[in-house]
Length: 180
Image 1 (cartoon, helix red, strand yellow):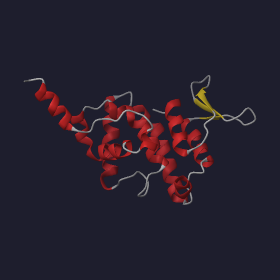
Image 2: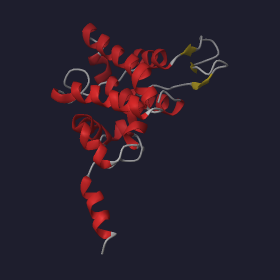
Image 3: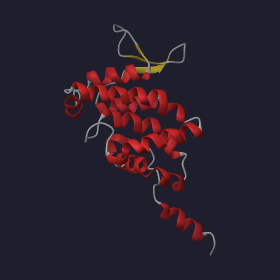
Image 4: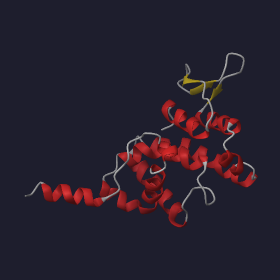
């Protein structure tokens, strides 16, 4: 979901002071850094401004290459247009997870071979969808589950969100425990 909370977490990952973030009169996410600067509206625009302000070396490296920067921007738009709506509709979520699962078939990360802002944004945006899946449902999306499980192990990415279960052993233990 493209929320205030997720925006705060992404700003923390980027090591950038966020300023004031909330929803304007049209219910659009808006960031105000200071009274002297104009506000920025829209999740993708806010994240792009945070990326520009970040001095984190891994972020700077990723954005030194124009093609990589464009791919990251595409994933920001993907998060807004496709991932966020999937949190509200199970059929949309399945289509999204099928598509993402296919994309991650031969990749560990969304852009190139290292963690990027794209991974962090999609991770936080898809978290609710993944949390709503049962362990056996997650098995249908092994590549997404692998990617998500890997990212949630990184403290700088997860930032206190609950760890999601990706083990069917826990389900098996629960099932046998109820029948003894």
